[in-house]
Image 1 (cartoon, rainbow, N blue to C red):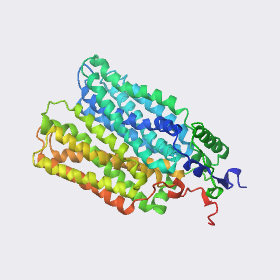
Image 2 (cartoon, rainbow, N blue to C red):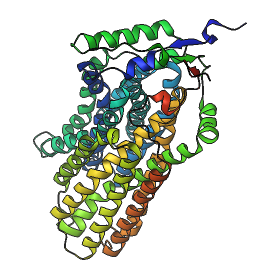
Image 3 (cartoon, rainbow, N blue to C red):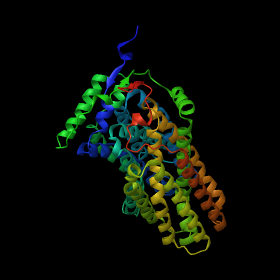
Image 4 (tube, one colour):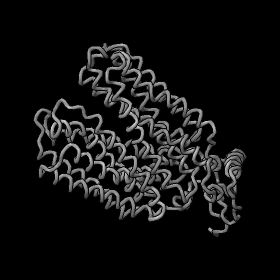
Length: 492
């Protein structure tokens, strides 16, 4: 016997979401959900700069190797968290998961501050808490990207998603600005690094309050056969929009979808979608994510080495140089995002990747010519990553909108994990090309820059060839959900 859940239903919910005007509701929702990236930028920047301080005897007295494993533990946590919670987000819903993942991040990051020493047990505790914090943030990426794309009207989806992804660098800039006075000696060395690790958890408490007003994705509910809940959710959104004086247009019945809610889908179903239904899109997503991750990890993790050893001297404090770099990365998605909805996804993604790569080539030759200083090198990076950041944010947008609704969060998780794995290789490659810290090679760095430029340009070429013109289109038009039988009136 066929269950009630399996009977086809007709729904206007996707069309009702996409026809809404922008309103304060959408702004509040983006603030509540988008702070995930601020947390990640804050966390990584603090951990990166506080890490070296943990080698001091009056802090934890860790070895350099032990400090290095902090980033590894956090990265592994992100990969595992993305894969586990990406699957759960598709199964259990977006709203439930973005509370669970935030709570996991809160626990992991807060507990890091209570590490008591450098013995084996304390190190195990330290790495475990970094892993847990990373798992929470990795899960956030999958759940939050899915929710934002499914709740934002189609004509605003690109610029909103790109701007939100770019706020990672707002978090990095905040962390860079905070840590300068925090670690300057004003607070006891036994406490300053602990306070630094508690900044993110304090922000997380504020985020929990903001997220309470964000409803479950009506798209997710209707695709899982929970029609009554989906109606309550979309009614709530429409009332919120109408209450601000915005006109809510009626939706023509011809835009309805006929849906047969599908059973729970796992990674096996995702693999079928990726390799059988959408091999071109899978190649596009993988290349965009891998190339941007390689470039970012290569440049970011060699940033201080380049400044200190080629311009400022080995004992120089390079932390202030991170602030303009982070600001440039933040402004790119913020200022260029709207063009991904107007000029188009394919042109803008290809353009930003190719332009970033081309500018990196120019800066490489300027470096080899010896005409750059620490200031002009930083300016060059700011300009390059103004464009690269917009392209990288668009890569996350791409993998979150070009696959069916039922596997969206898992797709984000898989491509995020792939990017992290390849990105983790980049610092090793750059380190080998640049040479030892006490005797770095300018020639090696030149070719390292050329390599990064070529990698980024490959992403641009693939985007130009395989890009999906998803601008201002409903998610259901970009990728038909597995649950959809047909669109009303289509005759199909």
